[in-house]
Every structure is written in structure tokens, then in C-alpha cells.
Length: 393
Ligand SMILES: *Cc1c(COP(=O)(O)O)cnc(C)c1O
Image: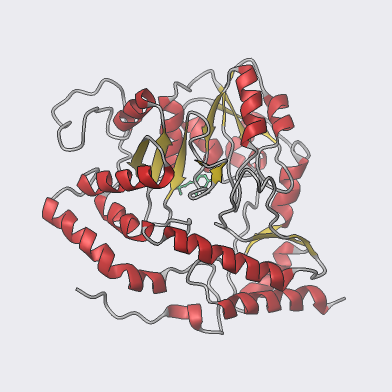
């Protein structure tokens, strides 16, 4: 079966550069996706079934994890990881103030309290000194977040966590393919997560997520928590009475099919992303008004994987509008730091509490960035940015 013939969409058209598209690669991957999906129909298992198990095995091989547990999305994965690690009411979890909102909300959903800390201005990840200052007598866990292209300083954070007896739980949702001294993100502490949201480095055609851990007992609890508290292997557990209260965070087998097909091309996609990043950097180096381009720190410990190409720029919001008027899509990651978000108002923070996070939120901009992006679209985007920033000098 062939997919309905699609136009290549706007990607190759000079007139517009969408922020994200995977239309062209979908067409290429369709035969392999269809092969997996056919097996799902033949098996009759559509949720947490055989295809999910096959994808989990493939992800154990890719990451080196003892356990890779497929779930519905990374937000659920974080909440389950916290619950499975025994974090709940009365416990504090240190979370960077500059991250996707789910890093903080997952802590609340697990019943615990997020305690925010500031970030490093270059890697945008949790700053070790700020982490140490944020520790309270109730701190049970710390959640380093690996953003955009590189990991947090896991040596420094791990040392502080060890000294205080604090569990390290990684929000590695963006970090597939990133490794710290060869250890895949998510496996430096007790466990971590991956997101397969479509725009992520390995994206599904809908939502998906994963838990990674080397801990057998934690893995057993996580498998139960994703499936109504039931333990046992998929397909055999329905008759058992659950020991714990769990929700429904199962991965579906159609998304596992898509992900299995795309996993085969993941390293190629990562290499393509590196080429695109280099082209952006060449096109934007030396442009007045650009305050920062991606800079990899601790490159001896950590390999970069470009999930987002993020710049810091003057008059960011005006530039967003200027690019939008020229058909170029962008995203601001992240427009409001967590400590100033209304959903965390009860924690009583005010502007100025985490200055590095606040400065990042005011200046950062994600440019169009995905394997389907053609080099001419990168050049067009760079030219438009130069035009805007050089225009009135
Ligand atoms: C994408 C993302 C999440 C949430 O992932 P979902 O699968 O969309 O729930 C969590 N944390 C970070 C840092 C992310 O980038």
C-alpha cells in the first residue's frame, strides 16, 4: 500500500519556511511504517502490545539501558518516574527555572513540591551552585534537564546530589542520542525519560514517551504504574489485581510502529541536524544584535545532539513578527521561566529571583530546524535575520 501522494508541502518552496515539518521524511519512511502497522493489525494488540515490546528492545539496544519502558508521553513518564522513586507529598524536588513547564508540573502531579534553581547561561541547564543553595531538609530528588543540544554538567550535579543523599532523576525528554562519557542521557542517575512528541529528535505521529533505567525494582514499579498498577508482562496481566494505584500511561502500538521505522534513521537524522546547525552558525556568525549562538560546553564529556537550534537575540519579539511576515516560523523556548508561571504562583516567586533564567526567557529564539529542512531554507532564514538586525544600523 502506498500513501496518498502528498505534495512536498511548503518545505522546498522559497516562499515559506515552517517551524516544523516531517512531510517529506514521512513519505520516505511510509513503506517501513506500513510493514510494522500491518503486524499490529495482524496481532490485534493495539496498546502496550508486541510492537511496543519490540520498540522497547530496540531502545535498550540504542541507549544501553537495562530497561526501556514505553509510555504515552514524557510528562506522564516524569510523573511516574517520581512516583516510582517514592517521591510524593512532603518531598521537595529541585528543578531548573528555565525548562519546559512539564519538568515542574510533573513534580506537582506526583504530589511533591518543585523548588526552583537558576541555570548556567551557556548550556541553559541547572547550575550546580544554585542547585546546592536550593536544597532544603525535605529535598529528596533533583531533576537536571538537558536542553536543545547538550547535557547538564552531570559530574558536578551528581557530586552534590551524592553528598546530600539526593536522588538524580533526569528530564532527558529532549536528549535522545546525548551521552555523558558514553552513558546515554537518562542513565546517569536513578532513571530518566524520553519524549517522542513529533517535533522531538525522534518523533512519533502523535504522542509517545519512554522511561529509561538500569534499576530492576524501579522498572517493575514503573511497568505497573503505566498500566493501572498491574504488574506482569503485556497480554497476561489483565486478570491480576493491582497492588498500587496506577493510571493509564500505556504506549500504543501504532506509534511504536512509527518509532521503530524512524529509529533506523535516527543517527542519520542526528548527523543531518549537525550539518544544519553548522550552516546556521556560519550564516549568523558576526551578525550585530545576535547575543549568542549555540555553544557546546564540556565537549570532552558530552556529545552534542541538536534538537533545537537556539539563538539569543536583541528585540526578539520584533524579530519573531518580522520573520513570521516573511513566512518563516519560529518558537520561543521558553517564553516564561517556571517560577513566574501562574500555575506556580503559590510558591511565591517574583521577578529577579532567577536572573539567568529570566534573561534567557527574554532573548532566546528557536529557528526552523528538522531533518527535512533544505539548505536554501536555512540560508533564507539567516538572510532575513541579517536583514532585520542590520537594517537600522
Ligand atoms: C518535550 C518535553 C517534555 C514533555 O514531553 P511530552 O512527551 O510532550 O509530554 C518534558 N520536558 C522537556 C524538557 C521537554 O522538552
